[in-house]
Length: 371
Image (cartoon, rainbow, N blue to C red; front, top):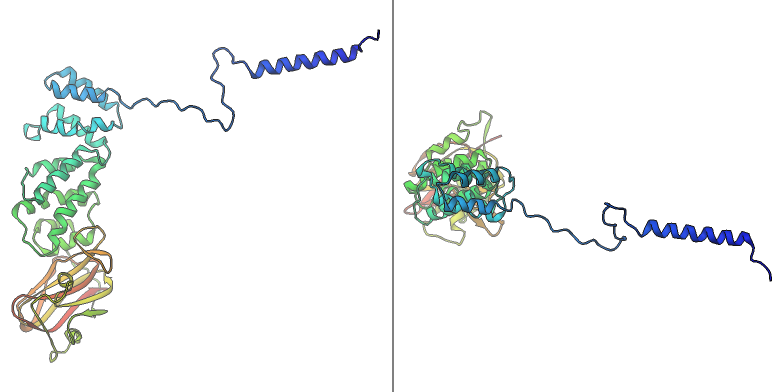
């Protein structure tokens, strides 16, 4: 019988040993080692993320249940200090802390928890932001919560400052630049307190703030803008387009012998913006510094100031928002009447004329801007 070659047997043995070694290396996990990485293309099972600050909510509830317990207060403060991003549920306890420890009772240690929550909770869940929004909306409906409350909350709103100021601008500041209903003393007080905070945070545009100052119903806000007129050269500006009755261009021709008669009654849906006559500037004037009027019959000049914020009035044709402060109330003696502006108006889209009683005869309007 023929024997199998020894050389072939050795090669087969070596192949079996190599295969066994390879199998052992690829199919065993070293003691204490990690879980094998799954093959590419097979997603691994995601690990459940541990909740952030899991016991903070219970600690805050403990303070609400036992406000005199120093141990509960210390535990809540310790957990809150160690929690840079409080969970939403903890933020939702802010109004309860606010009600349980009112500012009128002084800055109690437990109220400091609300302060920290306001500095860390995101917008939308920020208790100070929510308090400002509620108070401002209540004020705009005629309710009068204590003015100190929204001021404290606005000053401590942290990440919620932007949205809180947006409500202040929408509900309080923009209406103060529309020259429609007179401001109540309560609203004036709120504007005097809240507007400086939002202006300091950069949440009020300069055109809107200056429009409120020119309207003049909140004199205290004049300190927030540069009221000194620019010293650069001024020039008389003619409108690029005039909206009004036939012959309206005669009000800007500089001739004393020509005029245009303007009716009192509203003539079109755009009356709130255009009035009886509107001098339109395209693009808007960057700095309106002075103007004067010559007319027979009393009237009011209002500026149409385009604003960045979605507040005030909206023009569906241009899809822009604007406010409409009063810039001049003239008697209409037939002589020139100068209209002093307490501050330069920015972003002026138009100047509109509104007769106040009988139809007026508008002789001339002189508009000065800085170059």
